[in-house]
Amino acid sequence: MLLRVIIFLILSLSNSYGENLKNCEWDNRKGVPCIVISKTPNTSSFSEGSVSKIVINREQIEKSGAIDVIDVLNYIDGIDLKQNGQRGQLTSLFMRGTNSNHTLVLLNGIAINDQSTTQGLHNFGQDFIQTIQQIEIYKGPSGAHFGPSAIGGAINFVTAIDYVNKFSFSGHNSKNNSIDTNYTKIMDNGWHLNFKGSNSNNKTNSARYGGKENDSAKNYQVNINAEKWVYDNIKINSTVYARRTKTNYDSSSSDESGFAHDKMYVTQLGLNKLTKNSENMLTLHHNHYNREYDEGGYFDWYNSHSTVLKAERRIKPIEKISYGYGIEYKYDSGSFTNAGSWSSPAARGNVDNFGFFANSGYKFSNDTILSFYGRGDNHKTTGFNSTYKVNLTKFFGKFKLGLTQSTGLRNPSLYELYGSNGRTDAYKHVANPDADPEKSRTNELKVKYSFNDSLSFENTFYRSFIEDALLYDSSFKGGSGYTNNKSDLKQDGIESNIVFKNNNQKFSIYNTISSSKQTDGSHQLNRPDSTYGVSYDVNINNSFFGPFSINYNYKHYGKSFDFAPTVTKVDSTDIMNLSLSKNINIGVLSFNMSNLLDEAYQRPHGYTQNGRQIRFDFKSLF
Image (cartoon, rainbow, N blue to C red; front, side, top):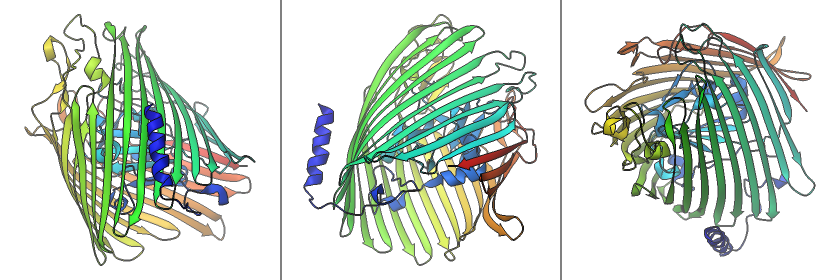
């Protein structure tokens, strides 16, 4: 019934504007689109320009020689990663100093964080990059755009159609290699059908520092996309995405047994309608996680399902005003069986959340825009909570000034609410169905100066407070669990970027100075106070070698606090990657060297990271 009401609402409102646009930007009937057009949720024409957004497209991913998502995100300022060992191992991401569960992860704009994990965080170590078409990074509270859990920001994986048919092989040796393929067919009946598939194998050193075995990770991905214009102004599209990653892991350097088998399946169906004065989108989404852990011969299982129905409408600008609105309903269910790690009884639970949102942009003049975004969420256990974002963007000649105040929200995950039906000793998890949501408030100032069309300098200053943080308590109700902490969290930072670019090259230097502490002054772990780096991408046409490209990335991670084995400040780290690509008669040949200096480091302490690795890649187009 709800679905029928939403469809009727969207179509009836759209028809009220009559005449269709004949040449809309996402109309791919008149040619083959080679780029992904992506719009941030809960924005409109004037307000979208105030969104802080980094887009990494398929071409950039391939030029970097990336194998997994970590290879890409490692070199983004304001993002710190912690991986428990080699490729494929558990990986946490800290955006602008917030906790690892404060970054919302999305697939085509719909949240996919696994609610059966301890705090609803996303394991980035499971995400390999071969079938992902584009990555979008949103730094800073984004709850008004995406909903709960985006306190630190959001990362959106895009799985759009790739119209370049290809087959690729990448290898370091017989135990470290990957293959992937992409094929798209435009049918006579108007359907655009796309298939992507990949397989990656990795076997390197022990995940634990000092371990003696070689741990392995195997990843499989399948992505199927389809779209068609069913009427002159209505397009339908669908996405099926599945990945399976099996990883060996070590409990310690002496106990090197155990594995994790992580499976995720996603289905999306979308309906888009464009009229003279509006753009309307309806999306139905379902994702399923199935995780299995071997704990010394005993198995733990974690399962979760999420179903989302989302409708959004953008109105074309009316003189100086643009606006939009929408609704989103999300239902999460999960079950947990701890047969090995805690021998705890099986547990299950469910929550739902209904959200509604709106935005408007007012263009005072050609150099001044005021944007407002608001969202309300009614959650099963925490009730009604709201988030908002206000931005003023002003141009003073070559200067661009942006002032933003925004709020964020994270509701407790299924595991925090229902993670155990009982306990047998003080080590068992105790569920907390009365947990309150975490809330944040952030002020941000952004200043950008463009010397000319090629050279620019940008500074971003931010200060964020997180209240009622849900933190682990080893003495909660006689056991251990997650409860709202009276000591709030505070993040401060400055992000600086100098960018030079022209038709053939892009060169950037970045630096981040940040502080992440509890209000009692204690430091948050695994968050360095300073990072800086260099990124360089150039296309060269040499008279002897012909055309080729070079991609270079370097990042310095400053000292940070970690358990080593007590809380100690650990050494800094320097990592760099170099990739070279050249077009040849039968395809593209690439050379990639990761961890160029072969630096031996642990992040976090006790876990070995990948050493220097040289890979060759061949891509054949057909």
